[in-house]
Each structure stands twice: as structure tokens, then as C-alpha cells.
Image (tube, rainbow over all chains, first blue to last red):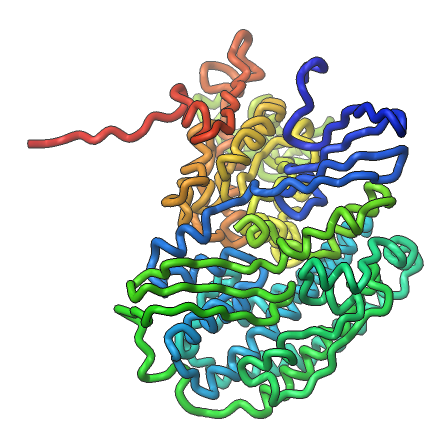
Length: 387
Length: 223
């Protein structure tokens, strides 16, 4: 590359910035092609020596005009697009969208479908948190092994999703008023087998990782998010609970049949990266408890409301906001209907984007290597950040 | 280097073999292996295709899954994902290329040394896929860079990526080292294949496509 050329827009580049008070600062541009930014995300960090004094996130590299497409397609045709928002957790995205449309249309959901929804949402939570632990440890430099273990379990869950919906990642499973397919008894048995052995996997994983001295040194006290800031910035999900705020939509809203199933909400004390990791590990144990209860109580009956209208679906004029506790936080859909076949306004509340807004506050005073871990612990998926 | 120790099954030479297959088999039985430089060279490089570690969207997750234990892309010699384009042979365009991202993708392709190959993975990289109707999605990366292999799916399964990789290896193995079809770095005076890097303009990419590589389809009217 020509050294006189302006800094490359791909990959990392550095340039000196004149600051009259602090001497020479160094501006480091990471991304959009960088192995540790979890996709096409760019951070422009200004360094004073080793420490970050300014950090400007740049996103929009994966802006796929999701909301505009949602306004120009019918209600049902937006369902596959919601799969591609947060492409690790298509099942919870589907549910949040279905919930919003059901609120809009006043559509009831049969008991069996509600149970299956909880089942799939908790499996998705396991999937997301397992992958997150793998990626986070990859970011700390623990290359390969944790991610391999995490993806082994991810494949087991994806096999279940594929057997049920026909697709590994893009499940497109929920419908307005129920689910698309009724799971077979054999599938239920496969789920109970997975739930039965997942505890052992978590034990194995935590034994490998959680007490590791290097992990403790790299994560404890790094990227502390005070509870007041977390509330003011609208942070949701495990990241908010790691700061010690007891807010879980499964408890607060009690949507679906969650009030029927007891579970505990793990809370962090310090709000640092380690707490964010630990809260997710503990949440997985609670998810397993919910899964066991759902498998025990699963009723019979229809999987979709027989009166549900799939074709020619035109809800009455009005507006609705449906939100659920996704693995990354509050995922919500805001819909305005004018009585037509398409939503008049379609808006997504992406937890990844809103959690990402505190990145600079978390990174100030830390090194670039810490910024990578902090970004990993926020748990972003660029499909959802940029939409 | 003793190729006999490492080449258990050499493919028969495609054009006008100097010796018959029976003679070749007899020689192999005696521990003598005859091959051409071209075959040996292509055999070597087709089994060590290093991809660029570059994920764009959903397909990137399946690309990572392909490199993990279950699918194990290392069986095909491609587990060495390089973070730097200078060390990579293969660009897997794994996901939606938006108009903001397209200049970076083309720049990465230009930074890769010859011989280099490109797989357009998934519907978005091929044509814009489900997001084609949108205002911000590039409708196919082949508008700027030459694509060797189109891998359909949304997203393609890891097995599909492995199949694509095997097809690419077959393509590399039959690539001649001389003549007009040789890789650019072996043709003296050949254009290195610098692609036009588009500008992210206020309305669209400038130019909207590279006219030398891609032309919009023409409507042919029949009476």
C-alpha cells in the first residue's frame, strides 16, 4: 500500500492526533474487517499511551433496510426477515414479532403453543449464552478450545431446531396465534435428553474456564457498568442484571405462561465483564429448570388457534408494542396498522444496539485488548445493531 | 522433496501422456512416481487454500461452524483462517454486502496476492438475496470482483460450504500454469486484476458496477 495514501478504511490503521493539552494522542481504527469486532463493526479509539481516552463506534455496515422492507411486505412475510435480525436467536425474534402482531389483532394463542414457545425460547437462550461464552473466551486469547466446546453444544441444539422447523438457523417457526409445526413425541424426547445432559456440559465448561486465573485477571474489574448508568442508558438483558438491577421481562411483564414456571434471576454485584459472563452462565442453569418444568407440564391440544387467519391477514387500525426477554435483552416490535395488509409503521427495538451505546463509557481508561473483551461481553450481533 | 512419499493417488495427466497408464502403474509398483510440475503444483496449492477470516453476516456463523469440530474444514486443508488479506488465498464473501461495506470488500480483494479465489457464499452475496428490494444492499458482489464459485442457500449449510470448497479445489487442480488461462501472476505483463474500488456516494455506489466485469442483463424482445 502506498504509505502516503490516507489510512485504509479496511482493517486497523493508526494516525497521530494533535491535542494541545495532552501531547500526541494516537487514533486507532479497528474494523470493519477485524477478527474481534464480531462482524462488521468499527471502533475508532483514541489512545493516550496505552489507555483509551475516546472511543467512537461506527456502525451501519450491515444496514439491510429491515424496517423499510417490513413496511412494504405483508405481516406474515416479515417473519422470515425477523430471523435475520439476530441470526443466532431466530426463535426469540419470531416470538417477539408474533407477540406484537397478536396484540395488534387480539389473537389468542393455545396453551400447547405457549408451552412450545417457552421451550424454544429457553433453548435459544442456552444456544446464545453458550456461543457467547465461547466467543468471549476466544476474545481473551483462549483460542479454539472454548469455542469448539460451545459449538459442539450449539450443533446439538441446532439439530433439534432443524428437525422441528426444517432450518438450522433461520427457523421461521412462529405464526400469529400459535406455531407452525406440532412437535412430535420423539422430538420431545430428544429435547429431554439434551436438557438432561446439559448440566454436565455446563459443569465441564465451568470447570475448564470459570476459575481460570487468566480469565479472572482479564475480566474482573474491567468495563464496570454502574447500575445508574445502565438504567439511564436503557440497557436490558443479562448486561443490566450483571449491574445488579433486578429487571427481567419474564418476571416484569409475565408474558406467555412464564408466571407459571418458577425461576431465579441471577444478579451481579460489580457490573464488570466477569459478572456479565457469570450472569449468563447462571441464567443457563435457570433455563434448564424452566425447560424441565415445561417438558413435564406440556399439555395436548392444537398448536395453532384454528381461527387464526394466515392469508389475507388485515388487523384493524391501531398500534401495538410486543416485547420479550430475548437472550440479549428486551427485543421489541412496534407496529402501527392502518387496516391494510402491510404494517403502516414497523419498528424494531434492538437490544444489541442499545446495549452498545455504553461502549465508550465502559472502555475509557482501559487498553485496546480490554476493549475487545468488553465488546465481547456486551454480546452484539451486527444484524440486529444495524438492521 | 520426494513426491512419491506424499502423493498416493496422482490423477492421470490430461493431455497426450508420454507413457501409458499400464506403464505408469508398473512404475508406481516399483516405487517410481511420474508426474508433471503442473499437477504437483496444483495438487499442493489446492490442498492448502487459506481463507480470509472475514465474516459479513449470518453466513459467517455457518462459516465458523464449518471450521469447528463437527464439520472440520481442516480435513480439506483450509482451517488456517488468516486475519490479514496479505496471507489469504480465498475470499469467502459470507453474507450481505451493503453499499457502505462494498468498498472495503473490494479493497480487501485487491490486497490479496495472486493466485486468489472468491466464493460468493449465500443468496445475499450472489444477488442481494432477500434484501435485494432494499435501498442499501449491493445486488451481487460479482458487480465488482470476479467470483469463482456461487454457493446458494440462506444461509448455506456447513456441508454446502465444504462441497463448494471441494469444487474450488477441483477447479484449482485443472488450472493450467501456462497459456491464457494461467493464474495472473504466472502471465508476464498480465494485469494483476486490480478491481475498481467504488465510492460510497450520497445516492449510490460510484460506479454502481464495474463495466468491465459486469453488465446489466439486456432485455431481448421477440415479436
